[in-house]
Picture (cartoon, rainbow, N blue to C red):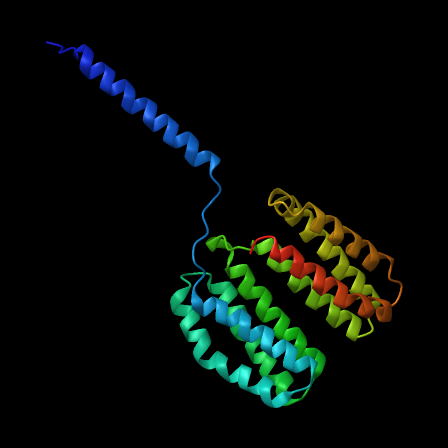
Length: 223
């Protein structure tokens, strides 16, 4: 014997189906919500920025203190970020490279290692949907690579870095514009055009402050 639902039950069932449909549609339209980036990961980026700055200034005492922090900091990161073993192993190896550069007081190598530490940590931020987005954060990483190439007097490396900036910006730009940053996006476009037009590392070096300032304005769209 088949029991047919009463009219009232059919109405309730229809309402439930309708509500589920509306909720699913809303979930599809909503962008992923940011998840708090673990403090241990944020600190890796901050100490990487510090060691980069101190290496640039040849302040080896303070750069050494930043390296010493990683002895504890990386242990906390390993506990806070589950998985991603290849990236964390690369991070550990890069910290060792930073140590060697500091010991030998090699400015470019220390800046390069610090820059790489930051880039790896930024990549680890991806699953947390941070604000600003990872692709915007990568613009800063590209800027450090560009600065190192300019400081090394390597113009082909400068152009490779500019091409990397362009690829990253191609992804980040629509997001910036969608957040009301069209004027900032146009300003960044002009900055990239000037970098492409630079014919010497010295000229690229002159444009680094402009790039840093413009990148900060791009980040500001999300803050």
